[in-house]
Image (tube, rainbow, N blue to C red; front, top):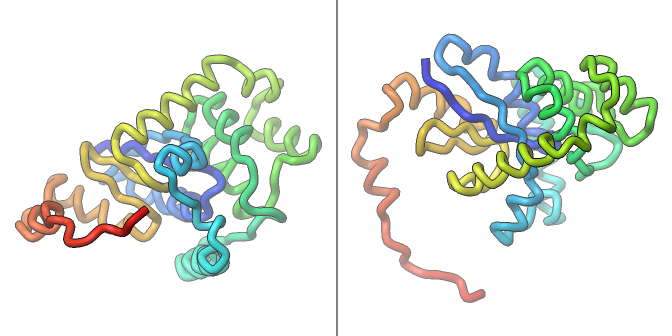
Length: 210
């Protein structure tokens, strides 16, 4: 069984879709959940998120909903997006980033269309997760430090978007790369076709002025 680090952010609808697919990969792939702050990755790479580009925002939302429907995964967007995922990321880490806790948070947001922006919503989610004092838990220095470590680790490994499955030095970005990651594992975590190596080494023919 191969082991993959799964970098995700609760703000990402595609991360939710992939989360719902991961249990089916268990016989071949063991996943370690790594919550990261997607906004910090975008800032470091000086890149806009999909929701920050008007036309792309519209397409991204519709594409995510279409993917979920096509896969039979229930989805309901929360009342605002993007939203601040920081409390949810820290809450997941406060629950030791177990898959069960991560999935429960994802379903709260993306299946039920809810956000913890009201005290009663936050309290209900925390109670469902068995966290008795969520405000104190997410304020713990070790929780904050782990989220920063995860994000820094993702950047160091070349992660540029979420969700990303990292298998050694190979990165598989997006829900639509899930099958590609499974195929990679089935091939012994390597690509046999030399074309894979050739296209990675292609020289750059032109660069845009910045």
